Length: 146
Image (tube, rainbow, N blue to C red):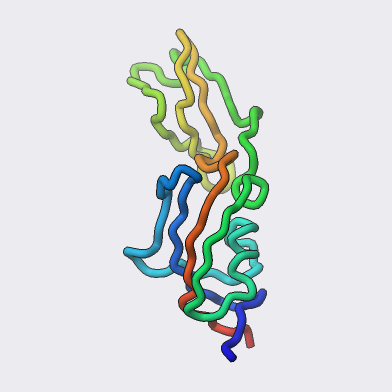
C-alpha cells in the first residue's frame, strides 16, 4: 500500500483548472508540475484539502465553490477613479489590466471593469473570484515530511 499525502509533505501535482463552462483558465500539463507544501497555506483552501489523502499517480476531479477558492466578488474592491486624473494622455479600454504600486509589498493588479463618461471603474478582485472552479489533478510525487 502506498503512502497518502498529508500536511507537511511536499507534493508535485499536475492540474487543469476549468470554469463550469469547460473554459480552461490554467494547466500545468505542458510544463513542470506544481510543487507545494501541503497545508502550508500556499494554495487555495479547497485545492489543498483535495490533495490531502491522495496517493502517488492517483487522479481526481473536484469542484470548488468561491468560498473554497478565491472568495466572492467584493464590492469594496470596485474603485471609481477620474479618467482625466489617473489615465491622463492614456488610451484605456475595458478588460485592460494595470498594477497599482503599494507602499509595502507587491503591487495590486486591477482590471478596467468599465468606462463611464469621465470615470473609470477598476476591479481589484481576483479574476476567478465569485466563480465555481473545476480541477482535474494527478498527484505525481510525495516527498514525505521527516
